[in-house]
Image 1 (cartoon, rainbow over the protein chains, first blue to last red):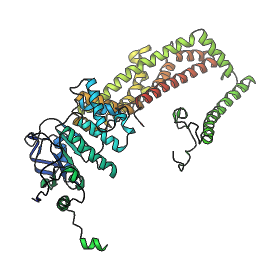
Image 2 (cartoon, each protein chain N blue to C red; image 1 turned 90 degrees about the vertical axis):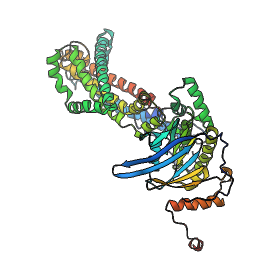
Image 3 (tube, rainbow over the protein chains, first blue to last red; image 1 turned 90 degrees about the horizontal axis):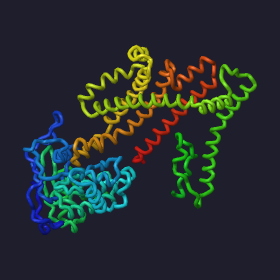
Length: 264
Length: 288
């Protein structure tokens, strides 16, 4: 498929230990709602510690694939298997409004941790997202960005092997979104989970991911590695803007007619 | 607050106690306006007491002038005097205790059944199919209509009174708790799944707290019905309790005693309502 010669040194980003195997394995995965086939034989491997972005137009089935991996819509193990623990951050933070912020984070540790350890780890997780002082607050008193940070803390506090992000930044304002991008990269570097980010924002995918996938007609139709080191990823980066155009074309966005744009 | 922000609308208490719990402006540079508003709130409260007091005064005057005969209704002062006597000789205390016990027992039984059935129906489809149809059919039955049957089944003792209260309590609690469980946002349950919670943990952290707001609505309704049921049951037949006191007084045209009994009924209703409101404030403190 479409591929671009890397113009930068190979995969960068946080230095991970030796790559250890595959965290998620999807083989010939099918899913239909009624008579409508949404996924028609998806194959996907996510390696440990890898950051993958999954793009697709609305209704392309990208959230469906995420739900399969999250175990929300159970799939046969022959089609979808995940090694280790998964956790999810959704588009809406989905914090339980009747549990305080630190209790919401602690919910992820209910199985297997003592109360004291749970509280401590929840506090550490909140500190990592810069919300130490909000531990005792009720979720409904938080701003959208704060709630989403708590949601990230809750997803990461259990040290998942696979972190599934379902358009978690799409409801945030532009500035908050940029802050969240940085925060996610920081947390990813620290906890080293494999990440599958479902998004419809091409720039977000190119800023964050090691690999960008496009889901089309129920199949993973395109794939681009993004070897550019993250600190060098600027919107004007020549290689990235080239990939960007290719991804947009794959998503069916017509390229801008340069002359017409210039004349306007 | 921005200088451009329009002044808040006149403070109108939106519910009982609203004026007390709302945020109060506290002095500062913009002191004159809030202070004036605060006085307005207090005056508003006072103003609301004017007409009731006037009505009682007129009642007293008409009674003293002999316009209202004592056989129809006793004067306020006489009612007060009778209340004092009834408290002093223990009649009122023991009658109230008996009535409170009946409501308490009936409520406990009805609430236990109602909530248990609601949980059974709310947590499983099988439970819903088994429990909900008969409950939906029975709830249209006016439960006071059951009094003759209850008397046939249970005689005239304590049991039919408690059963009547329990019947009245059961349905509002069942309907609201069931609706509360079923109205829980599916997205929270999904979040619980992704947090790898067990079934019991889901019930404890998502289902129960999520159903509480609606269940509390049912609690408030059911307590209202509980008192109503008790009054009806005690009026039909009783040999003790407030209803008995009132019926006994009727035979001797003691309208003062009747009024005292009615006043105690309404005070008890107010007290239970205050308890539920406190409960709601505590249980729903997570709401902004």
